[in-house]
Image 1 (cartoon, one colour):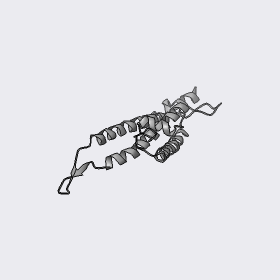
Image 2 (image 1 turned 45 degrees about the vertical axis):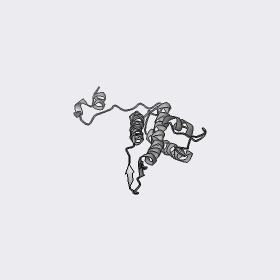
Image 3 (image 1 turned 60 degrees about the horizontal axis):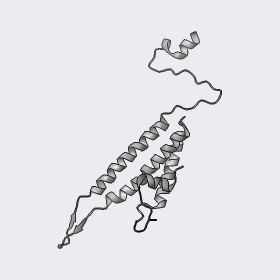
Length: 152
């Protein structure tokens, strides 16, 4: 399972250990993201034949996405600007918010791609068990593999 420092490294979130750096995302927020990703991907993996490496990668990628989503909520919700002399708030454009949202979209795509790998891995048959033939509902009965084998 990914660690808090692994997720921080992926999303480039400061932890406040370097002098002058503020904590951009709390350890608790990252831990919640890791726990939620672990639960979600583990459930998907229970019905899959995906390798342990793919499952671990999916958990890490999904945790990074969830953690960065928490960070992005804070950044995007803060309206940048200042008050003029009359006390009227003058908003300014926020290029950082745009960059944050672009990175969030990229992390989401990466998370979805690895989760798709987990979901699309066929289940591994029990040891000693031979899986039955795959029959498509679209095929006529006389062309279904199971019928052909039984006639042969």
